[in-house]
Image (tube, rainbow, N blue to C red):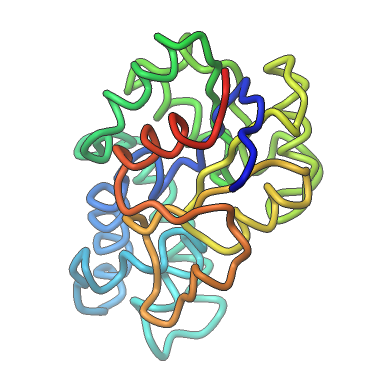
Amino acid sequence: MSRKFKLACVLFDLDGTLVDTAPDLVVCLNRAIGKHGFRSVDVAEIRPFISHGAAAMIKQAATGSDERLQRVMLADMLDDYQNNIAAHSRFFAGIAETLDFIECNGLKWGVVTNKLERFTLPLMAALQLTERAACIISGDTTANSKPHPEPMLTACRHAQVEPEHCLYIGDASHDITAGKNANMKTLAALYGYLKDDDRPDTWGADGLISSPEQLTSWIQSSACY
């Protein structure tokens, strides 16, 4: 980037970018599919599908199941997850320091996720992030979810910032598309829940980061605030 842009707010995807939710999701997934005779899956096996939602996780883990059974297992998984929202979920290494850096430099930050409010809000509260975030936009906060720009633009209104002064970080192609559609700068989080065949270098992001620490470095080198 040849010219620094004016940064006012850093927006994060939730699962796979801000928080490592895989341990809790996989525990609940295994309990749901285990009721119907499917073998348990490990975190590494299912991790790449998390950013595509619980239904994608069920379909991958319960190979050969029909749609009706998948809906039953999905409902079981989500009910279980709602009651065990943050038993093992933790910040990715370096995120706590990154949030401190953002706040200490007078910048706002928030979350834009496709995760439903029934899960997003309790998780944010459990991690003591609710009062710190300038905005929390879930998959059902607006009529459209990512990659549509509506949740991104709604986040800007809540945070009282302009989209062109925002940076969005996510670990899926629809995250980068959503940010670009809203005229934001974007970074692809390579440490997140990527599939083997994902090509984040083709997503059109303004940068690729392998760790949250690299986000801090990118902000320092590419933005003014």
